Image (cartoon, rainbow, N blue to C red; front, side, top):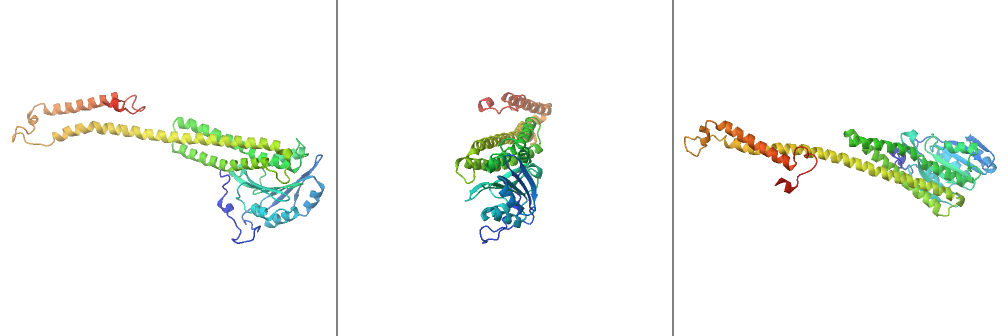
Length: 375
């Protein structure tokens, strides 16, 4: 997953350098715009798909709350006409069509504009930008992709559940932000299950695939953190500042949403710590395996050092007939067996010493001998 880090082809700004502020230049690869409107009041609601922007004028005059949802930001003319009808600021509209914006909150005179990212499991565990405008009688949302993550909210409006029909646009904004935050719970719980499985694997027999999966988990956790921390800060700003069109009556609900964001950030930090510990455990086990191998090789080479000395001494072939000091053992009948026996005694003595020092045997893999133990 790469939340808050959209694909490079979508994160580039397409406005020509030096262009006037508020210039709208769309990405030709972006999805074409599709507008759905859900207008509602305390007693009833009306839902339709709009092809003519002028049809919105009648809905805005007839209903206390109008939710305009635009899926796809590839149609710049549609975005511009909608902005003219609702008097949305051109700088905000520029951020709408140039996706890849950071999570932020911009208050204007007649409306509130905010940008965040929505976890999109249907799009390869990626995330999409959500641009939201809050006015006195309307809420406008712009999404990059057609799959709608807010269908449960539409169902609540259609069925009149809770207070969503009676609390105005501010409450609708809270419901949308709450859904944006809560969409992370299932994904993080699945990630937690994956981390538990990896922990069991690390404690047993792991392979290079385990390391690759751990790095993948850590990468996704970094993405979640990049997405959730700014969302938490945005909710904190909504609670602390006096903002246009945002009713204080929804602050109690925003506090609950802010608590959810804090819980998710804490969960991400906990998972990051566990995954880092698992990576360290894998590296430690790999290092221990290398150390064990090096210990065996060191023991073998250490044993053969004195044996090599003995073999080299008796391989110099000095003629004992020339001098009585030239290896008189060569004339001894049992000289060859005696040298071999001496080699075996030396090798056996060294093995016993290594075992008592803890280099080999039952304790060989558990500890490194201290200097006092080696003496």
